[in-house]
View (tube, helix red, strand yellow):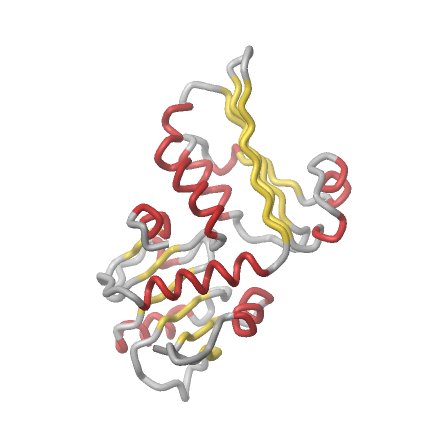
Length: 224
């Protein structure tokens, strides 16, 4: 079963170079014309310009779509094919997020702060932080976003060599006398491509229904 990567940005290029091709199927870039009309796993890492054509391809070929872009129209539209929504693809981060989703309600009523930091070039919605906020009963406007390289290095202790590609999240829960800090750090490119490879393998291995799946559902089901 071929894997089709949609997008022209940095993540899409990384996936085309890092996802394994072999007996399970080739990894190819999206093209509106010329692709074999066969069941595939489509990985959308683009801006959304191709989403309508990609959706038509998936529906006509019974292909599954792995959506890596946050704020996608597919989060709300009716779908006639399997869609896997992935605000994050690092497996350790996904399992941490699953833990928050199951247990976040236990901290309602406490003071909760949520800080996220990414490279200065990131302008899209921080999907991982939004998912974490929802699990903790916060709204997106409660999230503190850091893009200043000096603050990232001096306050958050991001190593200089990773200022150009990192994902940092901190949850601070306080009741006055006690505080709990949960912190996650992801550096570099490889953790994302490796996670996508595992997600693609999980999609290939099982028949999925024509509906949306949150990637946390894969974690809860033991598929990842």
